[in-house]
Every structure is written in structure tokens, then in C-alpha cells.
Length: 410
Image: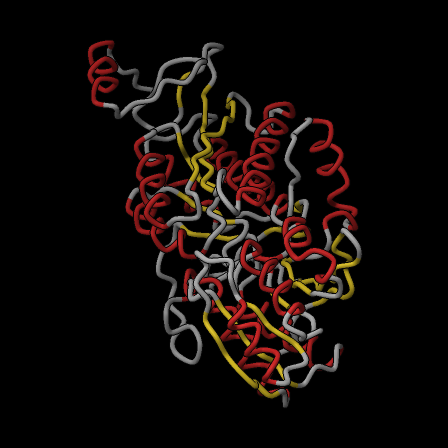
């Protein structure tokens, strides 16, 4: 590999364009030369590490970190040491775009895991794609990210070939929730609320479409401001609507107080949401009145999967102070997919990274296939996960309890 001269390194450092890892110097072609003669490959992580959604973000970061440590321990890619560079997007698209630019500037980065939010992903995709840097999200569920804006009823067109995800989409999650609410929970009058963001509005729309097809009635709709926690006005509208269920498209920092205030207004009905509310923090925020509330989340319960036992044990043994939360298994599998793609590229190039490593890793990702923490991990022609399983959870006491797992029957 071509080593930078001392002068070039000094100039790059002065310009802020270069980050040296502790183990050695950097290479132009991606991957740094480590002190033991090996190569360092960095996996970027973008997630909300501070703020309201940090519980989910920290679970993502820790799970990617665990994957790299396991890969190094097992010597999955001979001669390669994996590290992470974790950046905080605070669930803000502008921060996500800046983080994407920063990761692209670090030539050691050959892949990125994240983000949590679909709206943040929208701001990052082109930055990564222009640099041919592969991105694998464990949590984005908006269908347009992989299938284009006309995915529903129009032509499905993949916008960016560098973008993949291990989570299934709202094209499946919303309708799956509608089927459970109408067919299993026997709720026929729904009040639908969303936070006007990419994820929440999209999820609410796919739920509503399927719910109406099944025969359910939408008795009211409302948009909330996610920057506030006073939902008394909308809670009163829910009470007066006669709804027997509320569907909320959004995330747990708003869903918890919303559920609590709806019950306080006199509507003793369950609030149902997607994976964005499936967090222990929702239960804390909703309080005792959240009992019986429901959430769908991607995949089967990690704790019940035989394939996840080792992940759960290793995560505990690693001593992370934050829980892996809803996306831990998917984050581990996202990182492992990048590791497997790097392995293929190295093996195809006589044990070394090629000059166009990023492009080759992105190309290899399309054919990655392995048995992961969350089950079989592979991608379809859009970069979407082939694993379409979902689970409905109910709040019971201080925990989420799974009540039904399956796939959407469309």
C-alpha cells in the first residue's frame, strides 16, 4: 500500500482532513496500516447519542462496538483490525449530514452503521453514495429510502446503491399493526396522530390505508409538534371522537406523555405505535396508565431467538452500561454485514484492501448473506432486508411483553 509522506501527513493534519488512529499511519486507499503490520478498518456509527432518543442511539453504538470486538477476537478478516468512530446526530438531519461528510473524509472508514431516524438518513444518503461508502441502517423504516418517492402505487426505483438496511419497512410495519388492531384486538374506530416527521407520518399513513381496507373507521386525525409535551388539546379531541384505539406515528419521547394525557382526559383506550415507541423509556414516560399500550417492532424478540443468545451474553459480559434496546441485534448484524463485505473484498484481492476498497465493499454488500443475531441477513434488489418478520408487544407492568410475531399478509 502507498504510505503518505511525513510532509503530506502534516499538511493533512493542519487542514483537519486526517485522523490518525492509535495503531499507526493512514493509507490513501482506505484502511490504515496498524503497528503490527496489519490494516485498520473503521466502521462509522451515526445515531443520537445525546438527547431524548439517546437510549436507542447508545444501544446502536454499543452493539456495533461489540461486533468489531468479536470480529477482532475471532480474526474474521486476517490482517484487519476493526474499530468504530461514533458520531452524535442528536436525531437532527443537519447533524447527520455533517457526520456523513466527516466519515467520508476519514479514509479508514469503509462502512457506516446508522442512523436511527429516517429523516436523518435522507440527509446522509447522497453524501455516502457520492463517496461510494456503504451505509447499513438497523432502524430506518421509511420505504422511500430504498424504493423512491413513488414506491406506493408508482414505480419502485432505488435512489442510492450504497444504502442498505437490516430493519423491515413501514410498508409492512404499518399494515401489520392495522391487521393486529382490527383482527386481533377487535378495535374498529381509530384516532390517528403523527409528529409530521418522515418516519411518523409515513407509518401513520400505511397503518391508516390498511385499517380502512379491513373495515376500520378513522374517526379523527391530528398532527402534533414534537417539540412540546403538552398534548391536552389533542387528548380532548381523542376523548370526544369515540375512538376505541389511538395509533401514533412517532417516537417514545412524545408517545409516552401523549398516552398518559389521553388517559387523563378520560379516554381509557390503548395507544399503539411502531418501533419508534418500543423502548423502556416509553413505559417510564407513560406511567401506570400505559398498561395495555401496544407497539410493533422489527423482527422477533431478540431474547427469544436461539441465534441471539451469544449476542445477549457477550453484550452483558462487555459491561455496557446502556441496554441494547430495540435495535441492538440489528445494529450488530449491520456491522457484521460490513465486516463480511470487507472480508470478501480482501479475500478477492490476495489478502489486501484494493485501491477502490469503498466501491468494492459497497458492491460486495449486495450479495452478503449470513445467519445473524436477528436471523437470516441478506438484501433484496432495493437494499432492503429479506427478513420481514415483525412482533407486537404490549406494556405489562414495567416491561414490554411480546403478544404476536409474524409477517404481514398483504
